[in-house]
Length: 538
Image (cartoon, rainbow, N blue to C red; front, top):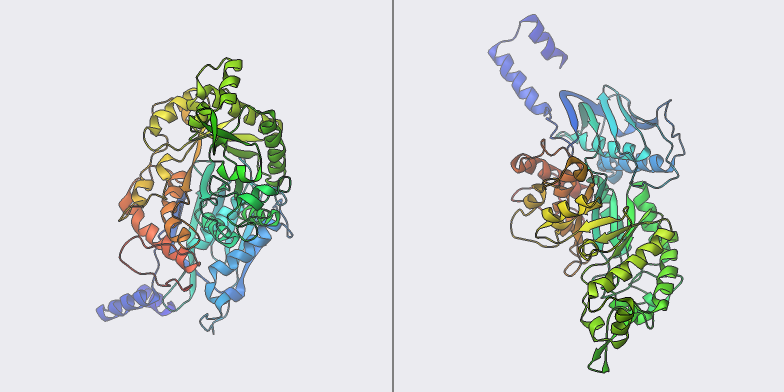
């Protein structure tokens, strides 16, 4: 390169020399950074690039950093990202290096020492990243912001055709548009092994998701092994030994998620979606009647018995101690009233309470009681939108979860007008699949495009991509989830005006999909094409 610069500066540059220069530039493979996914709020890149070598590459703490060596979150992140950046190094197939190593250091400084805590709803994820010769400076308010910045740095690193690593001069100032960016996994309709959940958490972090909504139980099975009520899983799981999540399994998921800056919010949906509960807890479900005779079948949770609320109090006391997040999802959706209507004890209770034949009032009575239980445990409740639709009296800090696909903009207006906070999931039910590039539908969602004031729109705290499990287990979870979920990730993280073009997003998402594949995520292709490093896991 010094020879080229001399030729240019001395004027000794003929047409042949220019042709030679062009060939050399092509051979060097000058890289245009396609950018980070999801797109940062502001990013400036330069053609100036710096070589990286695994034997002279270091992570470190800034002198002014509140977090110091020994910080569990950042120490673990440094190890993970070294392996993710230098994948040839970990596989032992790296190219031979004969040049002198030039050291490069990523120096991380955070304002608060969050090393022993869990991410929460108020955690800042803002970071600033500056890449220059020999050094990258990463500054963040919290360790969670630093983890997001490390992900961005890792995506800036690339290899030329000879396998050498480079990073371009870059400046990034970044923060999420929404604080709640979730993925829902359903582990009741099909059991997902813990390893599949951990792999999902990894991929979530690559897309900067920060909430794992664990729909852990439902009608088909109860895989959560309760220490207080062990019969719930021993009788309600698909198999009492192989298809359960032990307390140790749950701790492992929570611990893994914490190191990625991901919250784990469990859902124990009731009074509907509880058929598996009844197998291990006598008298919990409502006996259905045919005329004056019990039919032998059962409906939703029985809302008229004191024992129901005693059971729920003990169960949620356990759940609140096992799951450290301040949120618990209580469900409350799709409650069928036919069984309640058939039961003489339920009808008598309704007359006593003055509900008449208004069964939504009975559901409201039940849900209000359950929300009060969790409130007493200092937990914030999330409930499905049905709870609001039935005019139930719930605390103002309750979060409403919008899931019904049609009319969700109207629902956003109604709920926020009532002063309630909202998580939007309706347009991101990506368990529904279509031939072609259906990720485009997720990408073009506008979460705040509804009729309402600015104050109402501040009540939309984020969104969630849902992967329900009717047709999904560990064999097809990751190809169905990725990279389609990443479209929702960018919508929830990035500035909407900067990311309004699906066509501009397409090549970036293609590159990101290839990055997921190289990192061992079985992300399905977007269209015809190839990755430089194809999936090697099969």
